[in-house]
Image 1 (spheres, rainbow, N blue to C red):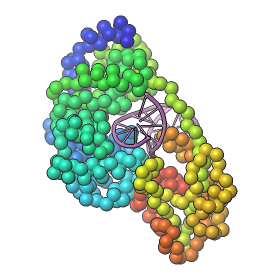
Image 2 (cartoon, rainbow, N blue to C red):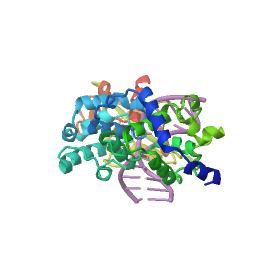
Image 3 (tube, protein in one colour):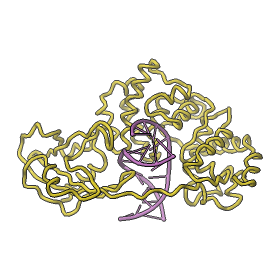
Image 4 (cartoon, rainbow, N blue to C red):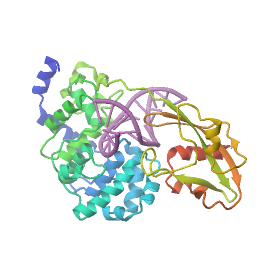
Length: 359
DNA sequence: AAGACGGGGCA
DNA sequence: TGCCCAGTCTT
């Protein structure tokens, strides 16, 4: 850290910063389905559910899922009692399906370990499935008024700019966390955390931040220097390989298609898929393609397949289609084509279905 | 410490 | 179309 940086940090007016931010939040707070009204106590169940959904996922995407979940399962005990497959079906499209499996485990643990009441202690929360540092601090501060430092990607960016942190992420995380702890107030810690995240999402954006609207720009080292977009610095990322595969869409006479269940853990764990080859970096051999067919049939190759990008690889998936009569109950799970939206089908395979429909 | 793990938004 | 975004768990 530079001498300038140390001096700025040592002299930082943390109390004034929190005051300005909370005042801005009171005037501009976003109305979101999971937020309590001003002055009302937040429901820990709703805070937990929303925070898990918001991991790696935008507010816009989460909103409708949150309403659906809380309508269907109003209390944590309702979620704990639901079959996992029902939960996965409603989660389909949100991604990171381990979150849904852990959501179910966590609901059951809250019932079993805590009598159906969420604990307020960040350490106890942190011990529950699917709750890490971020979510534990978010629940403790938002639902229980515990002064815990909440740091997500938005907060990391805001802090890196306020203090012109020169170390790249993820190496800088401990320093950013220490600065967040220094700034988090004892009063209204939950509103402070939500204010920082709102600021990062709406004003202190990755590109072209709207500093003219920022309540704390006068206390922002990057704004003073005019170098906002330089922060946060990041370590270079590895490039993604491309994998290839073939999948089979077997259409039954009555309009149902054949699906099978993926293994409970790993990529798209516990979700449904169209049968097919494994996905490999070298294109699958003719033998491997033939061996992956669910039955011998007159398979027709679609002219264009699907390209889909996962976190760590691209996938090019070719599609083969065939028709059969009724029967074949043992082959897998038959689902009516128009009911594919109601089952635990990840977006990748929803794209495959859509492509088949278009020919 | 590094890699696994989706899908949506935006240029 | 291609690039960016970013919590938790596992190894």
